[in-house]
Image 1 (spheres, rainbow, N blue to C red):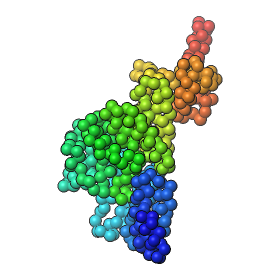
Image 2 (tube, one colour):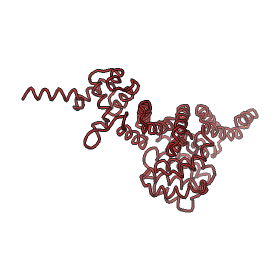
Image 3 (cartoon, helix red, strand yellow):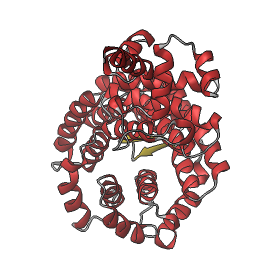
Image 4 (cartoon, rainbow, N blue to C red):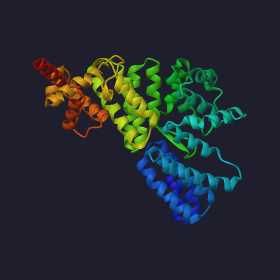
Length: 401
């Protein structure tokens, strides 16, 4: 398609160049070459303005929505999606399904699927089960905690090698919805069918339709599915690949999802090196999610950081929590921070690596919203969390009595 665009440009045929550039953009996103895609999108917008065909303006809006969602600019994405819908309606006279896909993607990231539930249920059940909406319904139910309803959908959609899911332009998006749903509810047979289908396009990016939405590396879904199936070595390979692809794409939303899922995978293993890296990934995911407003990812990352066992710290207190959501290990680290200990000294005292100690410190700063170690130490002393402070208080009380 790049060759076609060059040929059209050489002949001065801007309309055909616009067609070719649109297809090139699709391919670059699929291949995860987002640096090239951003430049191509700019050329596409320029040509759409010159050529003036409404269809090209619609495609331009769709591409800009896709990029805005991946970059975490959800407000911009929704405004652009509305503009594109208005243009599309002027062409066809009816609302487009593309706008629904875009809005669903935005609401998922924002943690607002309850808002979308009535319309998704209605569309999925009004004779449109051949569209992407029934797989979307499955993941919506799963993410809203309606696991029985999600399993009922998955039983139908993943049976007979996914025979009920049409292999159309929305095929890849549909499989990504189903993969997420299977992993949330633990649907093993569906996961096996999805893994077999998706393994052939590892190394690529999930794109829904033509420039409607993109969900990041296929390998993230393969990693989740492999983990559910108990294939830990394959899962680790896929997750590492997903991190590379999503980081290279410069799409923080995609990367936050991959960091969350890889961090979750590592958190359940008992090796110290896994626990340390798991914390690092979860902290990074949480930081991005909170910055751009990814409510669901933020909540999941925070829950994993608050409740991770073994090397990642046991929870304390009668309800299993501590002020600031700190784990038992983090409170121990915080006490040593209050004593002015370095990461190396913390590691020696707690028999963990310096790298793991640094990960705990980052998690503490994130949870307490402190800018540095000094602020964290002051926070601990003010709240009475530091054992040193508690010992000093007990000694003082004993002296007074």
